[in-house]
Every structure is written in structure tokens, then in C-alpha cells.
Amino acid sequence: MVIKYKFLDNTTSEVEVDDELGKHIIKMDEADYNLNRKETRRHIYMSVLEEQGRYITDDNDPLDDILKEERIKELMAAIEKLLPEQKELLIRVYWNNELQKDIAAEEGVSEMAISSRLKRIIKKLKKFLE
Image (cartoon, rainbow, N blue to C red; front, side, top):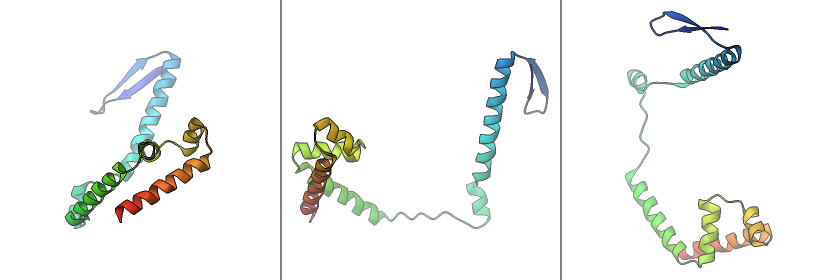
């Protein structure tokens, strides 16, 4: 099979390759073409937006950032007040993204039991944060 390559300077070159390898090269070239074609339709350069008088606004408010940071510190302090088993369950569900059904199976309890535990933990955290 003969594969033609077109270079950036518009010159072309032909290379003789095994049919199986040629099929793979063609598939890769098609996938690359499709990927680039899709991507180029979505790209808008910032300079073009500026030329059109359209700017992307910065919606961040420094005060909001400070308040959010303080709220996170309060939440972390409240979590520290929980029992070790409660902290572990929170970490497993919300930080490690483990499924409640998997935790339940591992602990030999129902999924409803894990759900109830989480509800009690959240209720306790809300109480700490009041």
C-alpha cells in the first residue's frame, strides 16, 4: 500500500508500507482530521473578542472569596468535632467518591443504614455551624 504525506510546505512524499500498517495509518489520520476539525470550530481567540469590543468579565468578588474561605475553615473545624468513624464515612463518600452501596456491603449493613448515618452526620455538622 502506498501512503501519501503532505508536508506544511505543500510538498508530498509517497511511502510504501504493509497493508495492515497502512490501514492503521489511515485510521489515525482520519481520527486526527476529525478531532482537529471539531476543535477548530470551537476556538475563539481572546484577541478576536477584544477587537469586537467583547470582553470576558471577571465575576470573582474578593469579598466572596474571603467569605468562602472562612466558611470552609468553619466546616473543617466542625468536621474535626465528629467521631473518627463519622469523619471516615464523610471522607469515603464526599472526598473519595465511594458509593454508599459499596461501603454498606463492606461493612455488612444495608445501604439505608449508611444513608441514615450520613444524614445524622450532616445534621450534626449543621448544628456545629449554627
